[in-house]
Length: 225
Image (cartoon, rainbow, N blue to C red; front, side, top):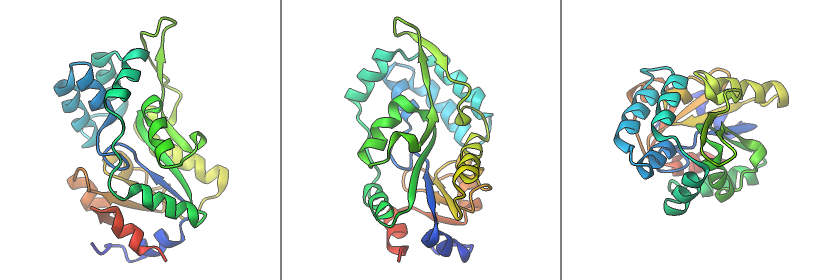
């Protein structure tokens, strides 16, 4: 699909850093929905996830609601990952390897949980220090305690805060955000360009607001020079 913003390809080709959303972008699932299904509250949590991704409710409220339903323990997270290992979206591993080969810095920026995203980062060769995600907290006995509210992605507008930190610290320009959700769209600015990804889920606001909307990572790969 041709970008509506003709500058989008130029920004993509010259980007100093690329930030990928994780759920329904780098991987084929919504991690919190997988965890909820494993815990027996899948449908209730999926409905809340849909509202959050569609921009109908504040992210932090939906996150708190979902976790209150799931109440994930340390053991539950570990067993869930073993039963449902991350499923990478077709082409994303190759694309990230190519970006790394060009010297582009690649980050994962997610409203999901680091405990479930670190295995994804390992699969695509992204070091832990280039991951922004929420952190589940556990009591001494491993039961659910809550989540770390100090992480930038723990609140509405958190992805924009994470990208602003990257720009301020490293001076990345151009800086691009890629994702499927409204929280990703809302990270522009500070992102210089937003590429909407619809290969797993398509959301009307993302299609309408993206500088470039793609449904296959091969389109981005083929656009690199």
